[in-house]
Length: 375
Image 1 (tube, rainbow, N blue to C red):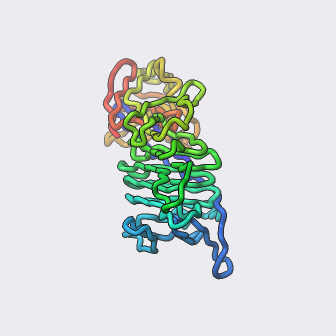
Image 2 (image 1 turned 120 degrees about the vertical axis):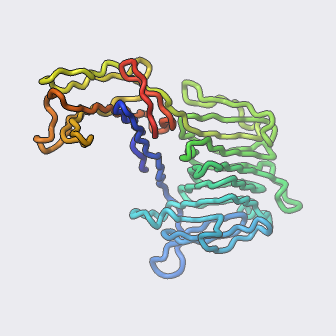
């Protein structure tokens, strides 16, 4: 699993924010079906009751026809389902992983017979399924909306939302399911926040009060669960995690609607105190800045730096509070201040929790004076 650097706010009395986007490249495992030529590795997945055989290592593009429930190979531009597109760029390909992207598509089980595969929206035999959601997507099954060993669901654009429904009315006449589950996972799974800085919702619904078998970890800085007895969520109540980290929503069987919402909280203010900004000629640079009370548990000072500027504003000498950031050329190391020279002070503040981010506009206060920041 790869995570980005924490967001950092770099101030220079004219301040700028350096913000690197979070990228979660999750890893996992899937059961591979071996077919065709020697060394050609394939995987099976069942989409809307259709058996789809894909390459375990190369990307493939598919079009799901909502009108008749069929699926066929497609070109990239017209595909609403893409499988293993991330694997082709991964040097450590694992047949156990399956990546699937769905785009503004409504998948419904065809319910042709009593067999569970025809009554499931998406049935994955993968040990780990990574489901990327683009736009408003819906998956419905008579017995299972989604059935997976472990699934990791993430939103990929500002419109991303996933609704998964277990609906026993979709079964063929004469077939009845006492339990129609929205989602069934064997191992604890994950819902990851929308990287486009908006809330991402995964809604689970069931006609038989079986919204979920299994559990999810919510990965975001602003998480909650809406739960309601009405399948459309009209009476849903929002629950937040307690100090123990659990959402005490009670007996899940009393709900036909569960909405897992993950999002991002933003810091729009930072205050720094005790920075030494005044020096006399001959003094050595000092790094004394602290975060104001109330910020220590959220942020940390990554670096302070002093730099000597020439008449064109170019940095010619500098020194850092972090030894590794100092110049290797000792001629460029700033060791003392000189009279009638121009110096530049900067401080970089990092966020401790990588699920938090800086807002587009941040107010920064240094030694009681405000400075504007821009991204």
